[in-house]
Amino acid sequence: MRFLPAVFWTSALLVAYTYLAYPVLMWTLAALRRAWRVPGAAAPGIPPSVSILVAAYNESAVIRRKVENILALDYPSGKVQVLIGSDGSDDATVAVARAALPPGRGEVVEFPRRGKIFVQNDLAVRASGELLVFTDANTMFDVGALAELVRPFSDPKIGCASGLLQLSGAGGHAGAEGESFYWRYETFKKLQEDEFRSVAGANGAIFALRKELFVPFGPRTINDDLTASMRVYLRGRRIALVPTARAREDTAPTLAGEFRRHTRDSAGHFVALLELRGLLDPRLGMPAFCYLSHRVIRWLVPFFLIAALAASAALAGRPMYRALLFIQLLGYAACLAVTPAALRGARLGPFRIPYYFVFVNVAILAGFRLFLAGSQNSAWQPTARS
Image (cartoon, rainbow, N blue to C red):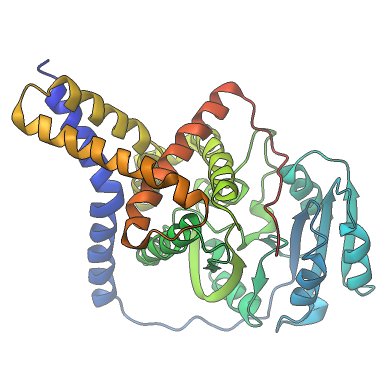
């Protein structure tokens, strides 16, 4: 019993650290760095050639708009290769994409149904650009986003650059509300990390990578954006965040769809822990610190929450821990009680943030179960498109 208070407080403090203390710490450190830094202008260079890679499965509803969006980007057309790979689509994705893509601008390739990472691996082999730009079929770039995204590569130390994704809560449900808030919160943390060029992962909807740094994904990889981007630190390069390179997409139209997406991503988190274990080497400095604080501890939060609940229950004979147990149970009971309303698409108002916190951590547990079972493969089912 003597160790139980330590279990409770260690668990509670780690949850508070990754969600609250770490962002405040990084904001403070970034502010100090900005105050001490001597401003400098990046030397303009010749725009690099880029290959835009889009892995698509049954995206006939959005693929024409995606191709037109790429073709409209403010970037020299002769330096943009468009590569669209169909992962065994059984709708009109390939036909629509080929009709929309002018001759000489790229290629639409049909692959058997294997999974997104295999399509990306094969498209990367066909890529002729100096930079690989990864994006999703339902993500639309601002017209100047590509030019902004490649700008940091004038610095040879930069191996990867990530743009910013703006979400619209098209679903109008609790998950959409929470997801939009969460992305703003994540963006805040990444902006602080960028002061040290130690961003803890790129956004899969809009990021660029030097082609020579691309390593083919393994068969169990799910979070391709995190894996591809974070590997650059192991090669001695850095990740830049480019707030002016913006893209937009809708959140999932239903809370259930949002949960399935988070569960899949969460299964990938635990695969990434194995694939990126070298990033926990403290000799990497700030990138290792940011990865541990921003990603790894957050992925373990559900287990800390369970440990805190169990420890406070075992210590319920003491008034303080009995009160803490009551607060936890009340919070979880409230989330459970409003779930039927959330599933119907009701808005939760101020309660959306605590609800989304529990929602995401339940999804992480579900993803961990898939990881242990080995039942999550790389093939994915896109959410319904409007």
